[in-house]
Image 1 (cartoon, one colour):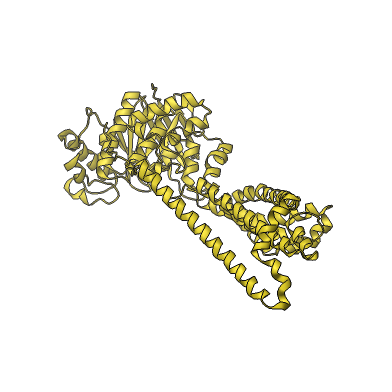
Image 2: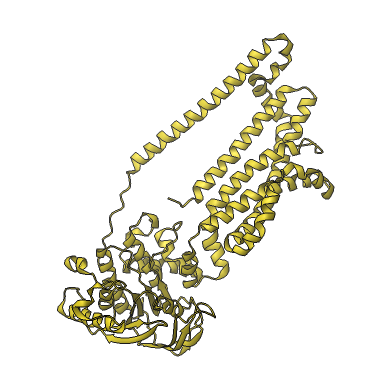
Length: 274
Length: 276
C-alpha cells in the first residue's frame, strides 16, 4: 500500500506564538486608542457645552464625574443590584428564546412544508416591534419581571430561529446518509451531526439576539420595576444625579460589549468553515 | 481485525421511484460468493447506483428480497457499509473522530474505540494524521479517511459507489489497489459500482453488466487475474477488450475498434497506464 500524503507543514511554534503576541498587542492598542478617542470627544462636547453658563448644570454629564461615580455606586450596591436584576431578566429571556428558537429552527430547516407554512406568520410577528407587546405582556403576566422576560424572549427568538434554519439549510444532506449508513439513531443525527454542524449559525443568531435583547431590556425597565439598568437610569434622571446616569450608561455599554465578545469567542470556537 | 464476508442472494428485485413511473429495474437476480469482489458496470441511468443503495438498506425495494447469509436485509446496518463518490467527512471533526464516528454511534467505550480507530488508520496509512483536521487533507487522503471510517466497523460487505471517480489518476490507481488488497486480507465482500471498466478489472473477481430500461443484468464475467493487477499486463488488457466488447454488445453498440467513441463508460485509461 502506498500513500502519496503530502506532509502538512505548519509554522514553527515560536513564530506562531510571536505572531499571536503581535496580533494581540495590536488588538489591545486599537481597543485602548478607540476608547480614548470616544472619551476625549465626550469630554470635549461637555466642556464646550458647559462654557455657556446657562448649561453649567450639565457638567456632571462629563466623563470625569461619571468615572468617579462608578466605585461609589458599586459600593452602595446600585450597580451590583442592577446587574443582578437585568442579568436575570436577560438570561431568562434568552434561555426561553433559545429553547423555542433552536428546535423550531431545526424543524424549519429540515421540513420544507413546515417552513412554507410558518413563513408568513413568523415574518409578520417578527416585524412587530418588541416593545409594542408591553401592554399585552403587563395584562397577561402577573409580575413586571415576567412581562419583561416575555418581551426579551419575543424579541430574541426570531434571529435565533431564522439563523438556525439557515444553518440547517446549508448542511450537506449526504452527512445524514453517511450517518444512517454507519448506524446512527435518529437522536444521534441531532446530537452528533445537526447540532455540531449548525452550532456556528446558532451562536451567530444568539449574538444577534443578545443585541436585540439588550436594546429592549433598558426601555422595558423604565416602567413598573424597582431594579435593573433601566430603572436605575430613570431614577438617576429624576433625582438629578447626572453622574449616576452617565455611569450607568457606561456600565450598560461595558456589559453589552462583554456579552458580545463572549458570543464572538463562541462563534470562533464553533466555526468549522474554512 | 478479522472479518468474515457474506453470501449475498438477491431474488426478483424491483424498484420504481414513484408508483406511476417506469420501474428502474424489475425481477433482478444476483448472487455473490463469500469474500467476493463484485463489480457492477453500466451506463448512466441503468439503475446500478439505485441497486447499490437498496443493497445497503438505504432505499427499500418495491419488490423482491435481498438476503445476506440467508437473512433478509431490511435497513442500514454497520455490517454493510457504503463508500460514496465523495468522502462526505464531517469537517468539524478531526481525522480520528471521523473514523470513529460509527463506533461512537454504536456506543463503544473510548479506549476500545481508540484502539480500533488506530488500527484502521494504520491500514490506510494515515496513522500520522489522527489529530489533523480533515479539511487539511487532500482529496485522496480524505477518501482514505472515508475508507478507514468504513473499515473500522469491520463490515462484512463494503459497497462502493464510484468512490474514486473524483480523484486524480495516481490517487485513484493506488486506492483501487489498496481497497482490493485490504478486502482480500480481511476477507470481506466488495460490491463496486463503476463507469470505469479498468477499475472493474483491477478490483473485482467478477463483473456484471447492467443495461436497458428497466435495467437488467445482461451478462457477467469472471475476472480470474492474479494479484497484484497492473493495467499494462497483457492479461488485464485482454480482459478489458472482452469486457468492452461485451458491454457494447449488451448496449447494442458496435464492438472492437469501432467502440472507442463510447461516452458513458470511462475507457480512456491511457494516462494512468503510462504512470501506474
